[in-house]
Length: 384
Image (cartoon, rainbow, N blue to C red; front, side, top):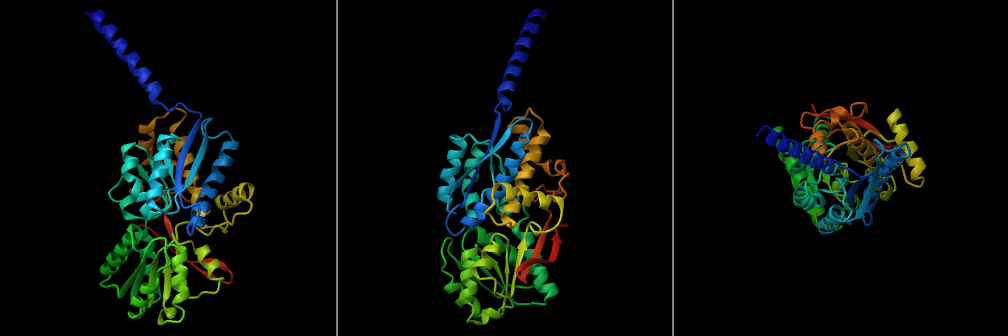
């Protein structure tokens, strides 16, 4: 009997070793999948984020990668259309066999792929979205890098109300999950102050149909308009409202609308604009920022230094730190488990801090404005 038990135990242990061997990640290359608008009106944002991340991975790979493994970022264009995003992600998971998803750009596009991501147990890191549903409730398969729109809007309202003394706040938003999550935050934060919106106007995604929103908001005479949209519709709104009473209102624009694209399209002459950003000024001082700029010069010489590529660069560094912390032997479960403690393991990066809810490893929101042909920080808000 003892001999039988010994034989069975040995067989079980041998099977467990075989299972663990094949469950452990075996490939020499770690593939990450990204779906983003790489063309069309939002193409600049997607391309910039990809370039920043890819530049970091290329530098990393020339030094041997992570524990001898290179990291490859596979990007597909979805034109900011959820249906195309879903097709891209299915291809990346089933055909490209990516280990994790990385840097999906946009709230409605990210929302569309969540059921598919969960059904394949595929992690999602650093989506370029501040939507609350990616943060609450906590999702083990999702690790956010950027701050949520709620904190961005809180920072903008603090500047507008507490510093400027404005009392009449309106909202211009994209009429989908992106705009709705921001609109909800504005209403909630104003309610906490005993205030209400004086007006709201929306437009349809991937259009410039802002005329009705301008008409609706002009009648409310706001001191400031919180703008929750992409760059082109925001620019269209600003241009078309110049001849209306809205021209005097401050436009407070959240980070997803590329501040650089907006100022270029407006030929750098618009006034009464402020922007929230989730990364510091890319042109600032510091070793991390110098490394970012050097990496961009090496790999994307024609690309402009900017907020989106810096966010991509820092997100890529976080991913590399995560794989580094796991050692050479890991599987999907240990990777997902490590996502929650990743921020503390990456503490060697001065811009990354541990959050209680592990959502948002860049821990500050920067209020900026464009003046004298350059962006400048006029306020910094931390999530305390």
